[in-house]
Image (cartoon, rainbow over all chains, first blue to last red; front, side, top):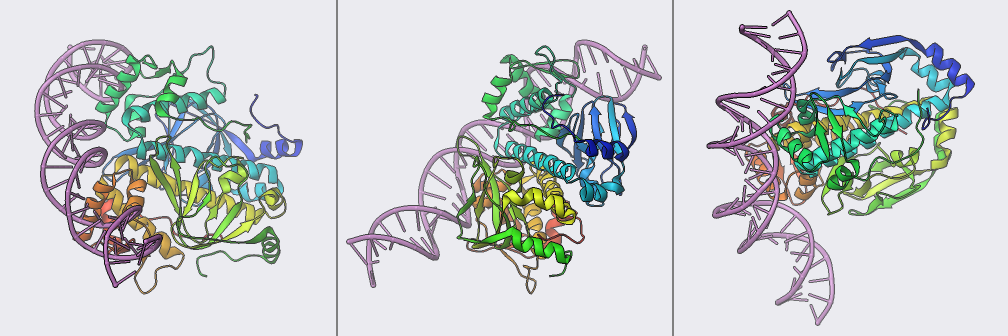
Length: 230
Length: 230
DNA sequence: CGTAGTGTTGACTGATATCAACGTTAGTGG
DNA sequence: CCACTAACGTTGATATCAGTCAACACTACG
């Protein structure tokens, strides 16, 4: 896989013992529960998922999307309580790590420790972008940003084959990401479709013109560069 | 200082050589510029600051606030480009680190490396809360959340003396944090003041009833527990 | 064949933005 | 010492974006 930094031999050996197994999750399954203690640490191998938080009265906010190569449950492994939930959008395959060997990883494999911090910094960077979007962009701009963002992330892990990508989300997901109602989200997505920027399929979105979306949202894209994989 | 984890001797020795000096910044000064390469890595020793991003047309979103003990510029040290700016709210004293010795820190001081990752996770956790606020809370709830949040953070670093705290921000800062207009922010803060929850001073906010604010926002507070200091 | 989830649309309502004016204060230069 | 200016905070009138309500079509599924 291009775009990932290569492993050293010792790192590879450690990671293979660090891994305790694989977990498969069905669409709609909750992998991580907000408020849970000592959940596991995972890497997503394939599929789409998302992180979210709930308010007491049921209002839901989607915080970010999880794509192959992303860590799941790091925050819960480092602090002790999980402060968000994670749900599968498609069928997932996760690599399960031994959470309690994280200190050992930091002690003996500085390269891997740095990679984890790198991934945490990248998450922070994405959240910053989302915050800018929710706070200061209009509904159209927000929607355009979100779809351009997901397209770019999918591209960077090789999910965009022959110029086409289906993002497996419903309009309810989009609404809960953008902080809008479903109805208004529907009208906004319709406008984007009428402009020829996207196509909305059954429970999926096809991005037709990424550059158009990025221009509409005035979004520069994520910084390029090689990323680590754990 | 209670609430911080103690250093080991070797860590203390390293940190004292890792530090190259101190930087003092005046209120309104920009310490870190969005788009800048190779900025420094700092720890804030005293004062209040904030991180923000701008849209091309000048719309500003404040991402988070920086209080004593927080790292400044970690994202820029790990990726290469700074993706946000940092501005001083009050007079700051910063501890300046040698950014290029970060790999050495990871290699020889696993405990400190873990601390950095802990701080990054905590930042992520705060951003998650902000995202929930911007996406799903009303103007009143958002304002209440923000002020309760800042009060709690100030408390945890010992800034709240004799039950009183002045947060050194203008209503423009609040507006740019909450994603609202200044005018509406003013009306919202007025309502909070009329409820006896806060008092608005010249260029500062005094929190009178944190519990009332937290209840209004349905916010649980940040997870408790000992934090690292670098 | 009913039911639940999803997407769509129109009518109406409400929250927040925009515009405008004004008071206060602190700083500045004459 | 006194205009003058620039931030900052305040308030009311009006405009607009997004929310709510309601109805309906479509599909998958039991």
